[in-house]
Image 1 (cartoon, rainbow, N blue to C red):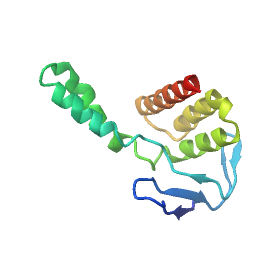
Image 2: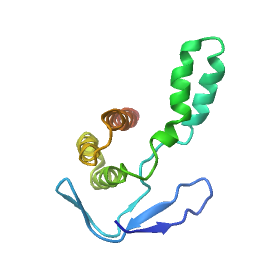
Image 3: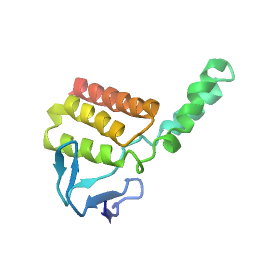
Length: 139
């Protein structure tokens, strides 16, 4: 897939990419010119992991989730095997934000199609579903 970089206007904003060609994923065509930022992994996760790591001094069971949060950006990069699934998910949500459950199911299906490890695919699916359920509830 060929992409064109769209530089952010502010340093804290993620770079975005525009697709140069149509891409068919799970029977859905993402048109050329669609803009995405890849997998949207929150950048504050490692900070939360460091806080848990410090709290682990008093409660050692917190060490395990702390390490997971610290390594989250390395385990779930914005680009890589999960890019097609993120592209499809972003496209479906842009078309109809009310159909987020369908978009999430297609996201998981594409992750499996791209041969992502089962634990990684389901972790990403549950993270996306939790976030969107929360966002749907506060609207």
